[in-house]
Length: 231
Length: 229
Image 1 (tube, each protein chain N blue to C red):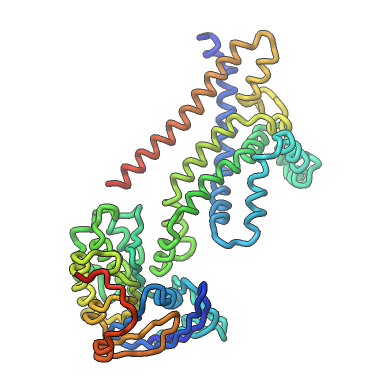
Image 2: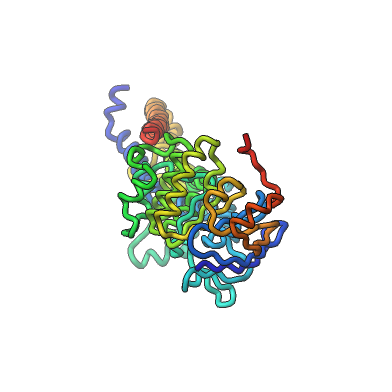
């Protein structure tokens, strides 16, 4: 076991996975906040449609989502061919893995944030408006800080989901060691080979630890915030 | 000073208002559900009536004919609702500073007027109902409003707390020169505070009463007097 844990290949895989999930969350969380705020507004037109669109990756077979990404962001895809002119390509690269992971995690990130916005007392923002606060200031100083636990929950849930993403990633960016081979993909590959069991079990252990740590970290942050508020 | 002439539909009844409030404290008096709060919300820009005109001094806040609807944030009104609605994640001082404008009242005089000095570092959840409502009043005052809208600010308090806050409202009326529109269904409050009274009955507010008229007309509308001891 010790020899496996000191294997730089293993840590390369772990580091790549963390990098992919971190980039995915960096892009997805701010976007999710905007969409969630939108969805939480009462009486908004086209809300059902937007909500359905957001939840699509949750119900589609991941292979379909991955193939969709290939069609859109592939070298000859609608967006991909355009980006290609500037030398930007998601194909077979870790940023593509982040795109797939981010898209798959998106509905899970939006949900708790939306709930946090919906359960807020909207009269607090009314009061802020009477005190002269602009829409943006109301959002930054009232709505967002009060929705913070929801944002954190979305972040943790999304990070864990991104870490474990498999179907869309392997369809979109394939399974290339050191570039797109994240934890789940590596575990899958190792399990296919007769001698890969021990390394696979090591990776499984690591992924359990990572997920556990993420949830623990969020619980701890909640406790700290709660204490601060009770001061 | 404040002219409100609006029509609108709210749920099952029609709001039909034509009032003119001058200096001092003007009361909108009526039973619960008569539409008092909606009138106040319309003046604050938090509810849009179907048509009408709302004007304060020379400034048009709302005019359906000319398609004018000034955003709440620009109306310069101080609003206090039945519940204090303090921002729960900010200290009392931060709440008070939220809408602070350099003004004629000044931080110090508002803190003194409402006795807020000892509360400044506390969090809203550690305040009593009366203290929280005083902070809400202070927060509204410090935004240097041209007009104060108070929507039953004492209704959420028990008798003892109400007796504690009432003198502050009297001071507010006498020491600041800000006109106040005050929504209430409590006769005692009105007799102590009001300069002018408008009767609100099922969405309609047109009849103006002086304090003397009001005292005589004891039959006036069904007054839920839960504070009667």
